[in-house]
Each structure stands twice: as C-alpha cells, then as structure tokens.
Length: 154
Image (cartoon, rainbow, N blue to C red):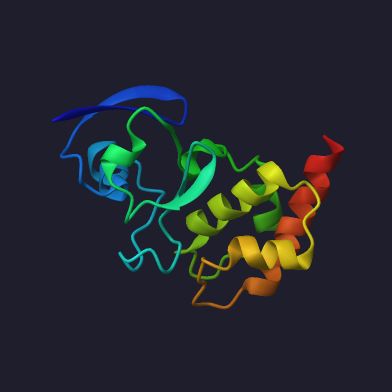
C-alpha cells in the first residue's frame, strides 16, 4: 500500500502498511537513521519527531496518522550543526552516549517553536517525556536556555 508523506519539506511516497510505526518508515523505507528506536512503547522519547509541528513518539505513531501531514525529523534541523539548538548542544557538551539526543533536540525544538523564552518549569514540562540514561539534564536545560537566547536575537 502506498502513502504520501511530506518529510522534511519533501513530498514522498512510501510503500508500507498503514499500521506500520512511523519510526520504521522513516528509518527503513526512507533511510533516515537519525531518529532512534529506544523503548518501542513511547516512554523514552528517543524516537521523537514532529507531526504538523507537534512532538510525537514515532514508535507508536502509525503511518496512517502521518498521511497528508508534515513530518520533521532530526535531519530537518540542519545538516551541518548550525541550528541554534545544535550549536548550544555542542557548546554545553550535552551528549555523553548520544543515543537520546535526536529525541531530546526534537522536543526542545518543538518547545522553542512556541515559547521563545521558556522558564525552567516550561523546559521541565516540555522535556519530561525524554529520558537521558546518562543524566545530562542540567546541560540539556542550559543548552535550551542558550539556544532560546540566540533565537530571540535573530
């Protein structure tokens, strides 16, 4: 079965069953491996992508839910680490193992798309569904605040 998608601004057609998790379509059908499989139960946030601007867990989002909508993956931020969040992530040395980072960045990007000056509570709420086993939460928060500051200046 074919489904039309808009992924990172590109109109694409994929051949997969409607109940296939969006994660596997992104990784296996489209070859975009930045989005990670973590728990498979929408609990860890490693697979976070945007669906019409909203963060969703792609491991539990069926392909049918993405049909005709805009999907944004980690690859949509920038290819050369120039997005303010990526710059801040590097500056604050956020990643340790790095596995959760694409989901963390996509949740942070969704937050900053609607809130240009988030408080600690705003950041905690927006990032609460993303688990970092390495415990880099203070650096994540600092990087989000730094990126927000940069984005406000632009």
